Image (cartoon, rainbow over all chains, first blue to last red; front, side, top):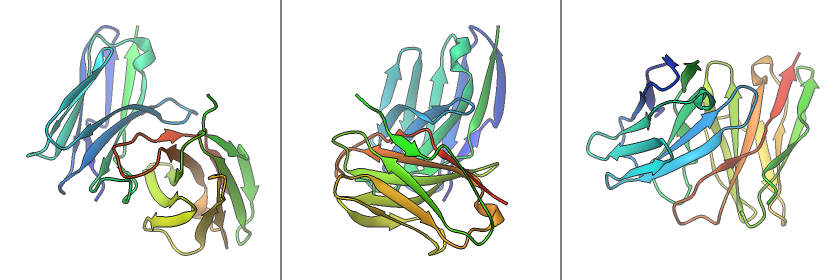
Length: 112
Length: 114
């Protein structure tokens, strides 16, 4: 089951904040977040395991609500370099057995 | 440390032909995943190889196959190419399975079927 990402696209001014959501109808083991710039490979941002943890990476952080099967990616004081397409990838069992099921992506455009 | 490499960068084939795509994982990584990124469809899981064995496959027909070599590099073969096979094919490598992991993606092979 493909996770649902929202919003599909967002345009921000540099310095503004953004939240990208990823929801699944199935119980999840982990949620992975990636960013892909046009013409480039997706780059790993962070992984969150079931247990409702929250992680941070510079001004980018994420949470995973196990009860809601929802993860949110928070981008604080966005920079031009944050532009790209953000994908969440979900895993229903650990150890890589399922591969990752990716959402359709959220296009983020940061304007000066 | 060298990242995941893929070859060729671009591949143009005619409908009905076969395509072979190659992937070399990061040193120390034993798992290789293949994904198809078609326009508007996002990343679709194709195949997972670990320790030389196919461990799982996504919802793709059998004409998508591959293998993993003793050095953990991998090959994806697509037989009887169809126009809708045109896409960016990404491979990703990960450390030995059984624990939380991150996947590191290669730059991809752009396959165009005419």
